[in-house]
Length: 166
Image (cartoon, rainbow, N blue to C red; front, top):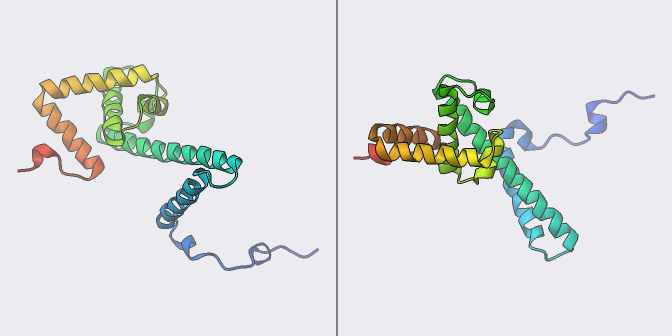
């Protein structure tokens, strides 16, 4: 029996995108979303349109979770915590505050629903609502805290906070 080599299974040379996976991954996702959106329009077979709509929803969910994870990791790093601590059941004051702050920033930056954010943090959606209201009330009455939040948000989104502009 002949020995299988890489060239036996993959007869053609690798595609050019194999060299830079991060850059090309975004292009592939964009192309996939375009194809799925056209298929979801329903111009063809109804079963295909339904499958395309479900695939689009799942792709958007994955992309949203990626954004929430990025924000969580950034805030955890700023507070010298492990990102998993924000998802843990820990209820000590420091961890709870960082979790509430992160939930608030996730909501402001991504605009995701309370339920999606709650799922990311292994919490109930009412916990996210409470966290957002709590942080919002504090920013309204504490100017220094508001500036801190805006700077943190600006660091995450790579924008200049409104209070830092002349």
